[in-house]
Length: 328
Length: 205
Image (cartoon, rainbow over all chains, first blue to last red; front, side, top):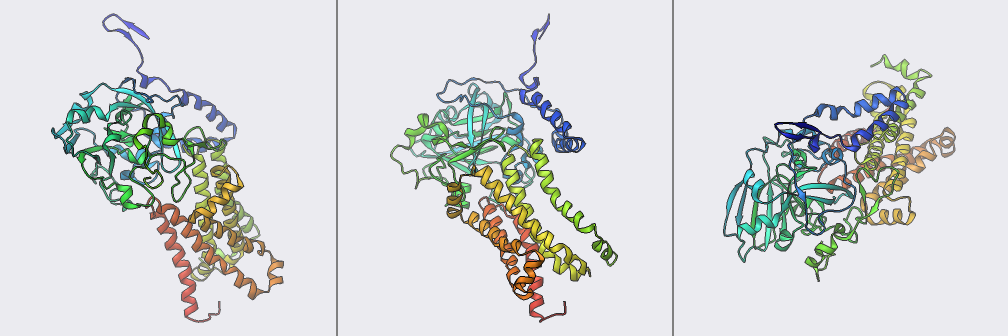
């Protein structure tokens, strides 16, 4: 820290401090060197992407620690490096490394979000307006991908309910449909036929109003990196990751259950609810266990997946009396 | 490439081919121990060993057509090596699945195989390679007799198709089949060449 007469104390921003994971990598580098020149050559080759990205870091987006029940899990957060280099964002390619490599072309300013449907106050929000709409909170959520891996991510944002309340939904607002950006000029993989674009997701109104349903604008105290769904996305921690749409451009309130992208593509494999449930397997793989990225590597066992991803105490009552096997 | 013939017959050619075939495994092991397999090393290991199984199957199937197209009959010397490598990578693929995905719990592996068609098909492909690997040495060929041995080893065509189906079903969960199409095209050409040869009647080759 540095004391300057005209500005008071100057200290490093959180983003400038070398994360523990990074400085601890010195050891693995030394290990690689110990393995001989071959190992060292391999490690520089493998690090080429990291070097290509350069030191440019994001803009700070601080948030106060959330007071919402269940919003701060105690699990060890996944390293920023893993959170930003292992992504499913098919608009930029189907490989997990594609979004980090190719999402640089995403233009996050200017950005608007159209809010419409069964509400009294339809409107096109500018991003800046949404950023100021409610106080930013930091929330540490587990993220469980339908593919069987998981992370722990410190998001920055506020409850989606903060926005919904201001829109004054009518009695017809039973569901919320989220549409994400589909612009072939910014997204190189939209010509693939993996899904029909734009990507559409949806929630039941009570799910959307649940305080844990987060409208996220940042992670690790900075604005969202492009590959994580900049400039704003959803984070619904008790559902499989694909339910949380990235780079949102439209939010529509309706009386019918929205036709969501993965459900339309493979209705027997991806249900509308897609709550994390270790007892209901995906037809092609078991959902009983998961691999925590960065922790459950080659030499550690997978860990058991928790009902509603560990958020049963907070969200279990939303599904009371529902048959979770058929309504998966 | 008529100049390549003598090189293929060189006494060192086979050991070099064997070493080259083991390079992918060496790379994967080195990468695993230096933490270079990315954020999900287990998945990377399972998937790459599967990729290499399919690649060696394609290489094995490419020997006969290449002998004709390139005029290199000496390529036959490498077919057994390539086929055994396909089996070897298949075994490593299954072992890494059993270990990293199923924690080596026999009941879990068994249930997974029975419950999930794509794993059943992959296991069948591996099992189909077993008798071929077991009868790959010269004395087995003599004991079986050339004709019967050849009939048995035609099973490799079924193995290739099952392997392809395994890959397709795995990827189609996310409609991500572009890469599968590449392997499909290669296998279609290699098997198509054999069908075409059959239709044209017995050839001297």
